[in-house]
Amino acid sequence: MRVLWLSITASSIAMFAMLFSVRHVSHPQQGTETMAPVMCVVAVAVFAVGIVLPRQTLRMAVRLGRLRGPAAYATPFILGLALTEATALFGFVLGFLGFAAPFFVPLFVLAWIGFLLRFPMPNRPVGVLGPTYPPPEPGAGP
Image (tube, rainbow, N blue to C red; front, side, top):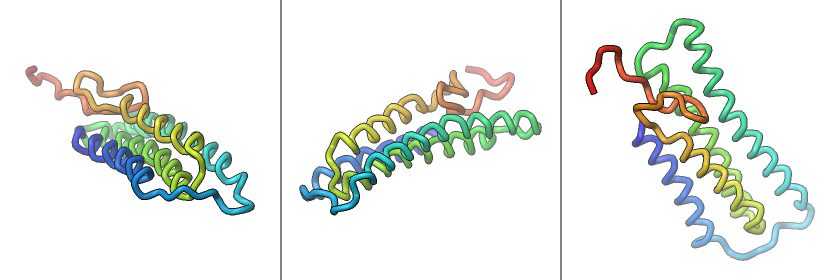
């Protein structure tokens, strides 16, 4: 789980770095003034869904009795990571289209906060933003 977390987090950092190494300074095309605020609102909504949906998935697995082994925790964890990365992708698109940094940098920061809160820890199977790590097997030693 930590390898997956690290790879997705690193990809968002790479996207941010790419914006400043590849991005040419240009202004968005005429008629796209409403695009940036709308995409920011959608990105925040996707981030919120990334908080709610993994918890709901985990609750459903518990209710249906399908909470067995690491796979039961992997699905909501990956779902949360993917939706958190989508927030960074919205920021990448806005930056690549030439919008100003105040539009796209907060989306990256929001995604990185989400990644930090989702860091998988064995002693915390369900973290602030949902499942992060399968709990230890009963009777397993330290």
